[in-house]
Image 1 (cartoon, rainbow, N blue to C red):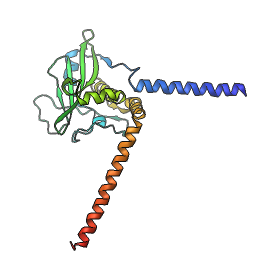
Image 2 (image 1 turned 45 degrees about the vertical axis):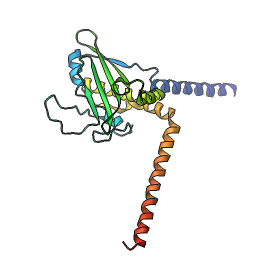
Image 3 (image 1 turned 90 degrees about the vertical axis):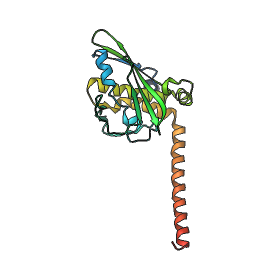
Image 4 (image 1 turned 60 degrees about the vertical axis):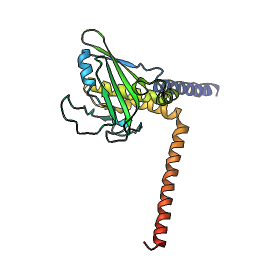
Length: 229
């Protein structure tokens, strides 16, 4: 009996430790913010200058620009590159890309034309034909004291989720492969766990708002019917 209980306790502790490591990895504490790619820095820069934000995380091109994370299947999707310089771009975008600095790319998410926050890829040569890319996230235009930056600093797991998604987008683009959503799952789970109460509140608020709209529409319909419209 004692050996059985010891085995159960051991498995429980191993499982708890694994979940703890998964959370720490998903929260960004155990995962590096950089990767190295077998490309000259100029080629990496040119490719990233045409790389969009991952729509699965930041909304579609036609979206208003509200940060979101939507879990969808299948778990891979093609990275639709932005047009070459001089080519016509007929699609609306909820972000801008600044590639003026040869060692830096800045993607700025916008909501109704107003900058929300920026994702930054810093590029450094790692030998003659390799480039190290480090990803970070700040308030718009590097504003580290504004409201957006404060919210990011108050929610490190959400910030890490966005950085993780951008790292995967960059890797997919530079490696010429599909975006692998499953690589973002640990960060998504950590963000969900850390912000569960707020997510529940947001969901309840959305349900209540929808119910209120329905009740208002019913009331207006009765009023129109009573007035003979």
